[in-house]
Amino acid sequence: MTSDFVRFGVVGGGAWGTALAQLLAADGAPVRLWAREEEVVLAINTQHRNPLFLPDAPLAPSLTASSDLADLAGLDALLVVVPVPYLRAVLEGLPSDNSPLIFCSKGMEAESFAFPVDIARDAFPARPRAVLSGPTFAHEVAAGLPTAITLAADDLALAEALARALARPHFRPYASTDVIGAEIGGAVKNILAIACGIVDGARLGLNARAALISRGFAEMTRFGLARGAQAETLAGLAGLGDLVLTCTSSNSRNFALGQGLGRGQSAAELMADRRTVAEGAFSAPVVAAAARAEGIDMPITDAVAHLVAGDASVADAVQALLSRPLRREGA
Image (cartoon, rainbow, N blue to C red; front, side, top):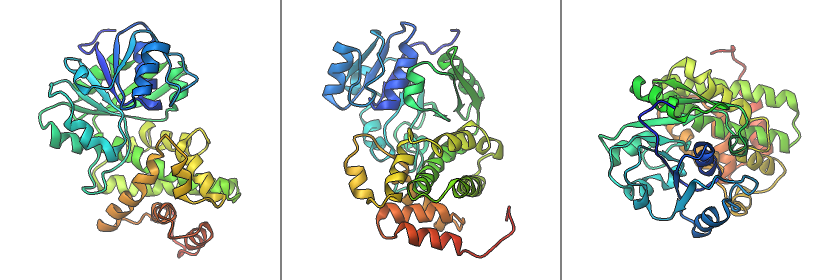
């Protein structure tokens, strides 16, 4: 591996953070992972496993964990895998190095409509920032199954250098300069995955799911282009690719949440039973509010936001979508 970035840290000990840490440590490279949960830290350091979030994945001995953010000082780059609602607080505790921050979480902050890179700009104005996003299930990455993903940074040279450093024989990052496109693709696809899960749970059929994926992609594209994203990014790995993956499998936390909603369970009870976060549940009301504020038509996103909030039934949401005025496709 030819790169200036050889010593990685991972901020976040959930399934995706653990999978990325294992990806980087599998060849014996030292990787330091920060986790909030002391039981996760202990299990990784003594059993080389994360039984709480990624129980079936054996972890390399060169992967070590800590619950002290100060232990991430002096590393060449950090992959930040913290849910967006908690991101600002965690960033405030990071050592103030100049190493790049690679954001791997998906969503927008409720108060500010900020994406992870925007939040990081507030905390570390001069620190290099990048986004890693695409069709990835954590357990497959940890198991070494083939994966392709987008690595976006404003500086193409930085994106390419980080892509080289992260690349493995089974893990292929594609460099991009469209940071906002990668951020929007990841945030919106989680919302649409909930919608597709609802279709599955309510037994509305495969025709409905295919229609929802395509019309949802139109929403993603409208929102992305209005905010300066590139159409190619939204049609690529970080947009359409991730959308297809998470809208077609119950391995997606967001799809599984939607299945429960479609079967008549409430969002509150479904999320109370989960240790892992369905990011789309946090993103839906935020993206819907941002779209309304900017005059962007996103009816599926708006419907999911109402369903997650518990102020609409599945039957009402479906009826509202089906009764919308007919329109020309692409309009």
